[in-house]
Length: 80
Image 1 (cartoon, rainbow, N blue to C red):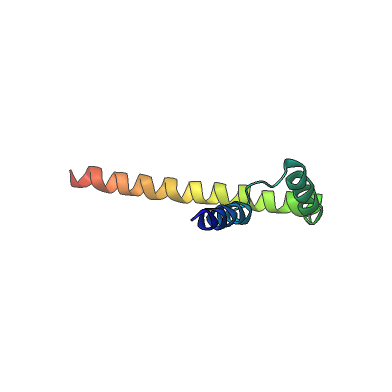
Image 2 (image 1 turned 30 degrees about the vertical axis):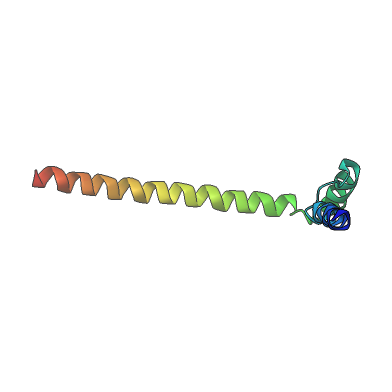
């Protein structure tokens, strides 16, 4: 019976390591820094161009939704 407890204890320790428990903070930080080094950042020109596209689409969509809201509001007012 003592042998079973020892085997279960070993299996429990192995399961903890598989779950990621017991990994040092230093190792985690090194891995994160390594992954950040693999990131390919967009150029300043590309970032500004894409930001412009987002702003333009925001203005276009807000105007469209404003017009639709106004028209539907007018329609409901005429019906009531």
